[in-house]
Image 1 (tube, rainbow, N blue to C red):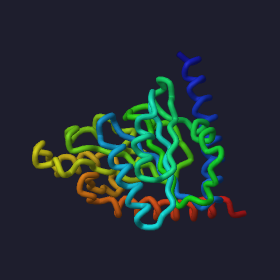
Image 2: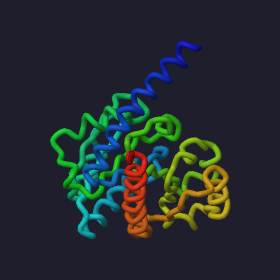
Image 3: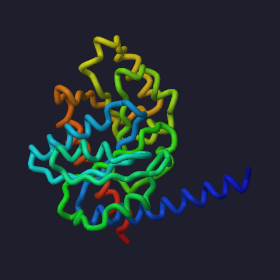
Image 4: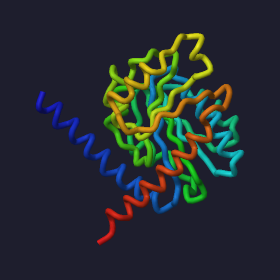
Length: 229
């Protein structure tokens, strides 16, 4: 057991070192980077497609990296937004790691970007331990999943900078209990903003983008302060 724990610590330490390098690279390039995590079926890809389109409508230069165990289906779908998109196929791995991000940035001038969104593999467990050099981690929760996901999977929601509720246009149909869901979020993460969204209606898209850009500015300021002699 101790050997397994030592191996896990070593993997995480290596990942954290590379993530710190990525964070510095992103900061120097002036690009906001967001890591989106959720369970499968939350509507993450649909919301990301809508968000990329809205960002471009606002004159922002955006791109996306998409993680999945197999196929490039999501990348093909997101490319319809007109934004540059690259698929990261993990071949069964249940999360993205910093070296995968670094390896898929080749050929992109990230200094041309205002925002880079990373769509992590659909999983509420494994991604919580892996820093990708992002400014903001966004945990998504759909109204169709039930209200108690945050307390069932506390680590991913505790690590989130923003919690996004998806598919709100279906809330009445599935009898979603908004108060219970918000209480579950607050039980695990009292401070994260909660944004209610719908990819279908466009609700919340501008609020998401504003938070991601503001979060990047705050992270850059903190990074600069930490680096100052």
